[in-house]
Image (tube, rainbow, N blue to C red; front, side, top):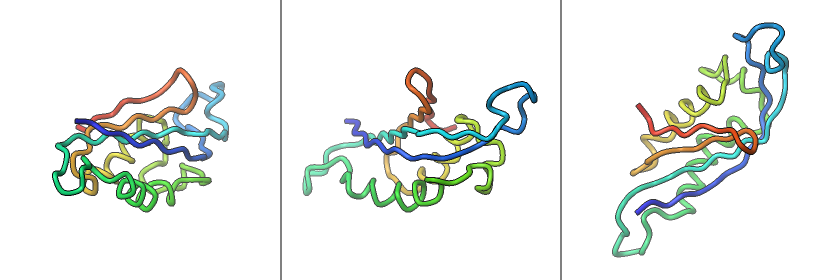
Length: 119
């Protein structure tokens, strides 16, 4: 079974490796939508695959508290914070903390986004 939990955060960034004529080379902000997917069996004791409260604590501590309302370029290992690199950064900071992490999705607007399942 798969369960998911969604989060929203706000951050600014500029994408330094783009041509000067590209609009995203300039500082700009996004409201990002992040969804964490966890796969596993239902625990017979508590009836959960994973407690959503546990996901909240892990994601808020290891992701949201670090990047919400920040300039992503200032975060170590996010000097070129494309959504692709941000997805990999999020995965790396969660994969050893959430048992059964299956995939994440990250979107910066309606109609665009990243699906990442690790490497």
